[in-house]
Image 1 (cartoon, helix red, strand yellow):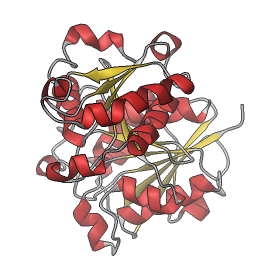
Image 2: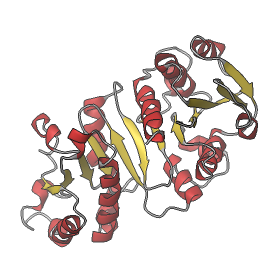
Image 3: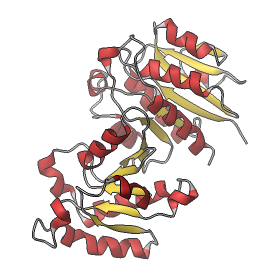
Length: 316
């Protein structure tokens, strides 16, 4: 197996990104045939770098181009003056060139992206722009269940305007690609597609969206041999008894999927994956938590899972 290079971006300098990354690396230790390249701000707290040093031989450089020249079993530490948004963009471009085989990202605030001069609203928009990918979706992997979002950061009042057979079909294709990467026992289960309206529309009595889109979507899934069930009643879909029925829940808008996902998984598990781009990107499923910056209180479990999945997927 050839060595895989995986970029780790630690996000806002005054957030918990470096802390959770350091704790994740300390927990996981060196991975066979894998080299980690970690981006962090200059002047980062020594206590987190020392935590990494307990498990890794670390070499400090100041650019990705310099990092890519390093051979040997080292963790490459890029102490950068650039914006964290630049780290994400640069790593994505390197992934497109296959100079990196995956990237795992710590939280990055929208404010930090804006201050860097970018028009992007988040990681996903940066990755979509760099890869010139049209149909990108947010996926979340958890211990209890997995979700994919058909739409993401749009106002609730505009959700129905963004839903059509084509948008649902593109989301289903990306959800199916993720399903095939899951363990075999889980991958054979159907994708559960949620309805939009209460009671999944009650046959048109409470909204028409389910009648407009789902018959064609189910036919599309059957033609593509994608196992699906739906539309599921949204307020009952996430009962614990239903978690094991589906490989993935395909949700129609941001909060429909993320409220139950975060309620159940909290900070103990949960990995965000960007679906549809031509390279591997995993991430934590939480924010920058600047209120606890430097207090050594951040829970690293999501970053542990993000790094673990990046390593696993890079090897497929």
